[in-house]
Length: 337
Image 1 (tube, helix red, strand yellow):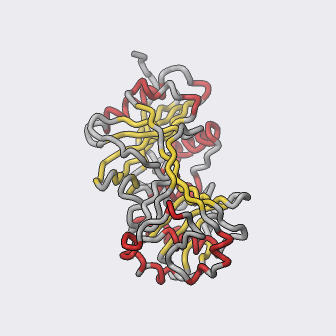
Image 2 (cartoon, rainbow, N blue to C red):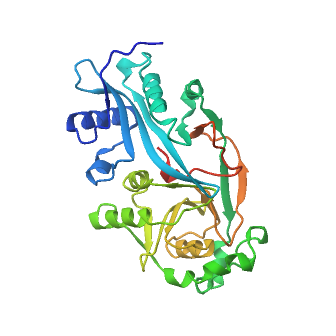
Image 3 (cartoon, rainbow, N blue to C red):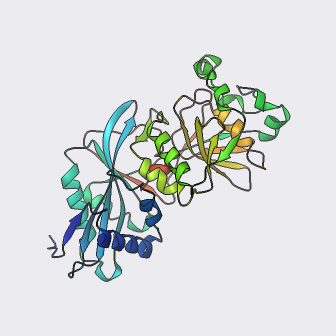
């Protein structure tokens, strides 16, 4: 076993020198800027850094971060941690620092959580099996939509789909969606973009997410607001929308081919997919042809297509001796570290 002689520190978000050094290493390694996330108060007690310092104890030279979360797994709440921001300064690589930090994290949590998971890129797939992680294939979910027909039929006044808008194989029975229909009128007819440079909008988003209903009973993350906030302050900054009554938040983007990439549906009540597409269609200039779900969908009115295939990047690794994953699931994109 490699002997590590570098100073170890942990959970130092309130120590300016070390926190700033961690930020600098993240920029150098991944091009990730954590400072806006911290300055907005989104770094909370659920995100903990395990790091080594250089011999002078001035700079972070290696890091493994822990995200503490609850995961609703097939209707049962499980305790989990997700590992992320695994990085080592180039001058200190190949000395076993990342492996040592991984072992520290596993030793601290393996007896108190039901499972540990992480995402890796293709360049480090050999690393995580050394710690008993198994590579897992996720399911990709999608639904075809005839957005042109939806507009032509004045769909904004309807609640349910017709088979001219969504093919029959996707549509669930009337009985399955009936309990949810009463929520549809609440959402109104328009969406407004939340301003992620505005403190009031950011705090509203965080509060609303803390009270949300689970995305899915098969796989959904709880206590993951800090991760969702990171994405909303960076890559999805201009993609966060709220209904006029402020009772539904949608995070999505459209590609030039009419595919809507849906990242999150945040509500305190059950939502029909029909309402989601209706609202998105009022905000985009293209007809919606397809919706790709970047989470595990669990709507009362549709059966999405399911395809299990290897991920090109963001490859899931899972570690547990007591917990198994459902046969079809996708870890929410906005809950990945």
